[in-house]
Amino acid sequence: MIQLDNVSKQYKTANGSLTAVDNVSLTIQDREIFGIIGYSGAGKSTMIRLLNGLEKPTSGDVLVNDVNISKARGNALRNARHHISMVFQHFNLLWSRTVAENIAFPLEIAGVKKDAREKRVKELIALVGLEGRDDAYPSQLSGGQKQRVGIARALANNPTVLLCDEATSALDPETTDAILDLLVSINEKLGLTIVLITHEMHVIRKICHRVAVMEKGKVVEQGNVLEVFQNP
Ligand code: ADP
Ligand code: ADP
Image 1 (cartoon, rainbow, N blue to C red):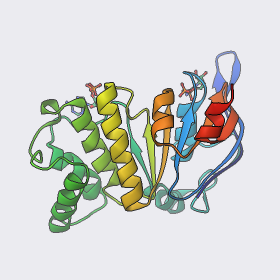
Image 2 (cartoon, rainbow, N blue to C red):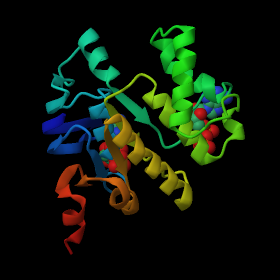
Image 3 (cartoon, rainbow, N blue to C red):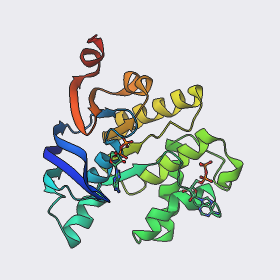
């Protein structure tokens, strides 16, 4: 479970401070697909950085699987962050490495031995539907295939939470739908929690169970997707 209690984040600026996230409280249940939607500048990216522990809140608490990642330090923070993985808008692949090597990268960092790594990479490649592309380089892949690599890499170390940062915003509508279908199947098969931020209503409507709508740092509405978007 992910819980935000009265979380605010202020950035210092040249002429004072700017409140990027303003007293946000929300709970995301295990296995949920939860969307955070808002226009540019609403505070979505700051929310993602608070959830993955890259930023500390100015006030309030961020709990991930009962660990207070706003207070955790050192090993406790590293362990908590081990459960959280990211998918990026521009994929962030290593261009001089193949599909298999990109997916193996987080396993290498985690110290997984070669045999186990190769077995795991095979499983992940099958999971995201990239069979036969093991040795391709990112430049040889379509946008959708690159994002499949990004998703496989994010899943390599069995996270319990997948944070998707505008994961389909660089893709055409058809590819977007295919990637969203993949996220749903991963959510169902692996039972992990998916939090996605987007400025696209379509993405929320297609796969999210619940949604929080952000404006100027505040959550102005949250709840079941159908309920929230029925309001005039
Ligand atoms: P979104 O992802 O919804 O576009 P952000 O979280 O990126 O929103 O930004 C929210 C507000 O915080 C914006 O006004 C932005 O300019 C400001 N902001 C974001 N990051 C920083 C930072 N590191 N320093 C100062 N201001 C920032
Ligand atoms: P896109 O078309 O997805 O925007 P980019 O050229 O922006 O592709 O690169 C996507 C990601 O890959 C970026 O995070 C970038 O830093 C990284 N990247 C690009 N070229 C290389 C490279 N030669 N080696 C390693 N990483 C690279």
